[in-house]
Image 1: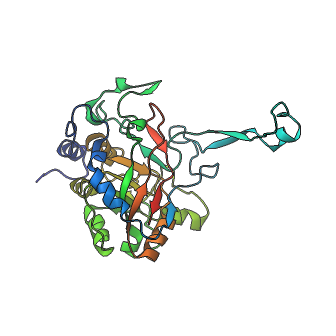
Image 2: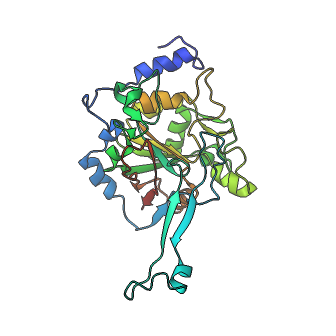
Image 3: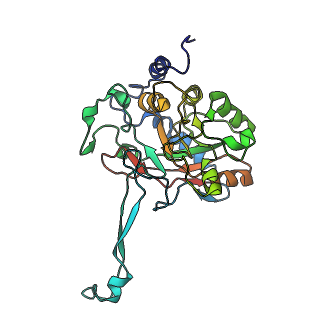
Length: 320
């Protein structure tokens, strides 16, 4: 057992080494913990479809999203019509026989809304998952661990851990940290077993707070509830395939480690190879799980196969 304090850079480094899965599935692996999703686990996940209820866990991709551009220049989606009803009305398409059409474009950072982080998204000491260096991400995109490499996922048994219900509150408070014991306690309270290959969705209620207060407040890169460094033990030990939260960056803000920004991204994304989802809207899912009296479902949430991308927007579907 470590004697290091759990809020130090040295402790983060120890956990990076302890939970490193580089080479576990071969030197060419670019799926990481998604390898825990096997044909057998998918078949069992499919058996969770009983009522046919479908719940989207995505925020709308529009100008009302949480981004202001203050972190990395991320802005909300900009939707533009290329051909609209006016073009049809003025005869701009009269050269086409009979058919008339509308078309549009969107300009957006790939991680401005509900999204998955690719394994190429974060580096630690110059290395991403698998030990690959920064030379593998150029102005043309990533050549290793890019998001299209997992376009055949992310699909499997989804489990919602509803932390506000576990704590008995409407929503968690900014700066409130979730530990391994909290995650285990929520699963037990919900009578759901989390295991190998599961995709775990962790609700803090921050989006409920945003809606109730009518402002994004500190949502974008500011103080937020989320996963603390202690949660790494439960997440790794359960051999889950991926996890996501309803917050901007998944981790508690301010981070609960001195001198390290987003330590769980270093431990779990870079070293353990676990894909991380952020900005998921879990409010309707929370209501549906309560109504269905179960917190497990088939989750279908594959990223867009954008070649070389280090993240991807997604419309995750929970199917009951």
